[in-house]
Image 1: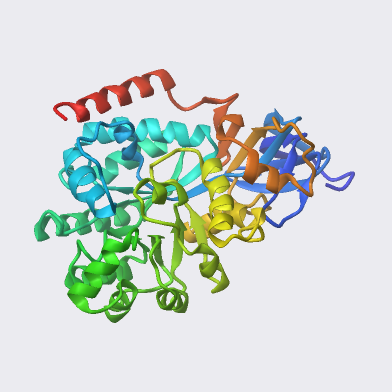
Image 2 (image 1 turned 90 degrees about the horizontal axis):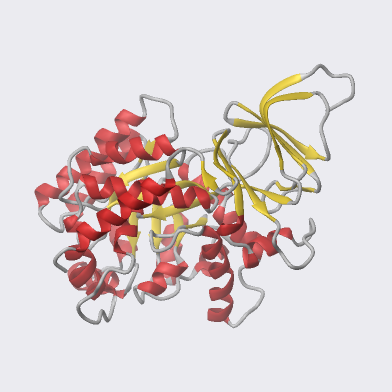
Length: 445
């Protein structure tokens, strides 16, 4: 700010840290960030003059990052962490049919979901995630369960795009209930400002009929909201699509007129080269989950090939873990191993996937610390044992940082985590309620 300019009042001023404006943007060391209402109004080097602030944060010794974005999550999934499994699960279909569907999804009710969501929001905020695209899979908890989730998410201060997984797995009637849940929720969220928006969602080509898929597409065209799907998480979907329709899943969706640039396809582990060409043709967005793909034995998604085609790829936790820093690190690692090439997946690419690409995919101006962008910030303690410089900070963060180093989190201009503690709720009570809910879910297993 030029000397002699009038004093400008802002809501928040963050001073003294090393500011990473984006994956390939300028780095200010030391730098500052000024926030008014819900957006960044200024960012620069050293200490600014001409500002007064309602709240000032001394970020000396910290690294200031854009908030991380998880574009594929299942926050209810925390209730299944450590759950006893009676038999060996051998593949993805086995995982779904003999474990996840009967013992987790189908047993969820609103009380269990409420406890799980509160805990999951708390842990995501505390580890630097400021926005999630969450899919609720609870066919026996309908209707109006998304409103329950939205109320909790917004009260704790997390930005979110929520959807219910509509599927005909239980019955065609239950599938329609799921479609109606999303449509009703989207329309309600579109009438009000706030941190939460809605999205359409269906499961897969092996749990949804062509007519059902077409109906979802038509409803999304009417509401203007996008569609979130699971896509080729394992070889089972490909096998079933070829068996039932004589086409690969991407070809089937294309025949149904489903693909648009508003589709978010998560997983994409077994997607073939020809299918990737189809996704690129329609500018479909991709969410990559390297850790959960390992959990279910799905494989390693062809992310380098996606990027070569210009596809927008972002990252997600899939509810398997909380820490997006772990997701970044593993994204950086596994593709190098798969390709036997250390030049694959540079840190800047991974960081962009976890920030700017995620925000773009979810439809808001975020993922960077720039004037006019949403004020979603993460202040990370510098616990690195080696020098952190403007030249290496992105690599240091992607490869070596941890969500446990997070000190402060700002979402929409408001401090929601301070000194490593949730500022918007009682952590002890939230954890206690989650534990009780998990114990209830596990009863009789």
